[in-house]
Length: 535
Image (cartoon, rainbow, N blue to C red; front, side, top):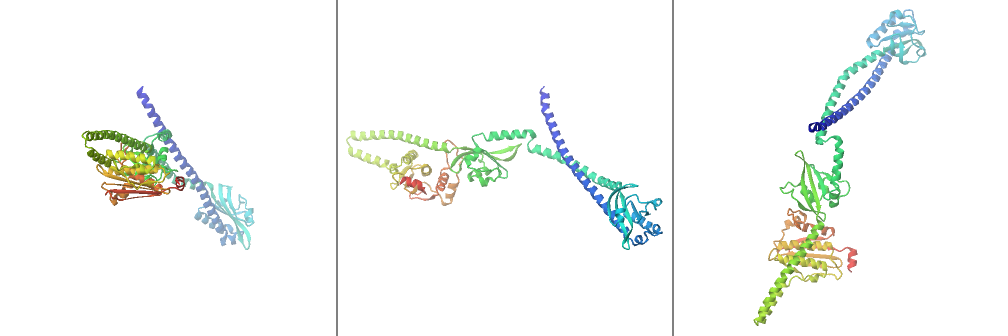
């Protein structure tokens, strides 16, 4: 039973292929038949026109012969005109040439026995001086005829009738058909072979999928790709977009029909770089920036039968998750720092108790001076804004854990009613994170914030190795990192800062600060309505 069941789809598939081939063959033969009929109709018309032209020419030539004009109507007309008519018949290839006098009596005719008889067709119109051209039935059958009057001394003295049998014209047409038939049959055979080859190539291009299954596969593909929560982008070998689902359009901010467009013209440079990269780790999951969105991108080769058809990129939005993870990291660092400080304060109280128990208050005072000096540095309270103060405090806790000293420049200041928006917190948070990482254990980071009614200025410098001028543009446009992990956004921070500043029509610059490392300065103007609100 299993063998029979397996043969049924195979027989059905072969039957469908045979039906498709028969349909293609029918189309080819139908087209060739239609073309052949058109050719035959055209040739039939053409051969008749050629025949009419021939008999008309012979008739005109005979009627204009001087010997015919002078002798027609005389007793010796037959002896003079008959040789001329016979010569015209043999030379021109017409079936007959008949010359009659004004009374319609034959003077010259192919059958000598019928010379002297009345003509079998109507010559009245011709005797009145008019020409005739048409088809008539004569003693030998249907003929294509031309009739001309014979003029002499200004009057009609007789008529000339020249004809070709229609059967002869059909014979010529059949000869033409016989000449064309092998070409038509050859074209039919070639069309059949080409049709079969095209059907094979089409099946090969669609990987053996039957035509009726293509629509179902397309519907399934569309339903799958446009129902998933991840963005999916497809690019062919020529670098053109072949697929962009709705989620990808949302994440990438694409509008209109972009399928078929060049990926380099549509996608963010970081995404296009990952799609086109031939590096060994290009297919690893990576963080990329699209606008100000942080995306998790995974690239894969699109393979069919072992052959590459292009590449696909799967995108996940990590913007909100990254912001939450950064906030969680700051809170965790702050909690750890508070726990460590609790132990540290307990130890310091024990030290002070020891000094006082031994009666050396002077040394206790010196110890207090030392530890209070070490604690000074971070005074986020000068910033006045609660959200910004909390962000700086969280980064200060992270800095202490990393052995870095974070200083808030005492010249920092904010307007009384100014509040840090999301862009300000993003810029400060990313600049501090990068500076703390660059400074390293034993290093120093300084923050300067000035926010007034119409402008915000942020400056962060560190004591790290600094950034060479050649690398400045690279750090702002790189925006891609292979270090993927929970809450990790290496390579994203400065690129994100640059995009935020550009959106706010501000400026960002990098140089060497007084601490010896990099100094990043970001400035932008407050919108008019926001400045009025602060005022």
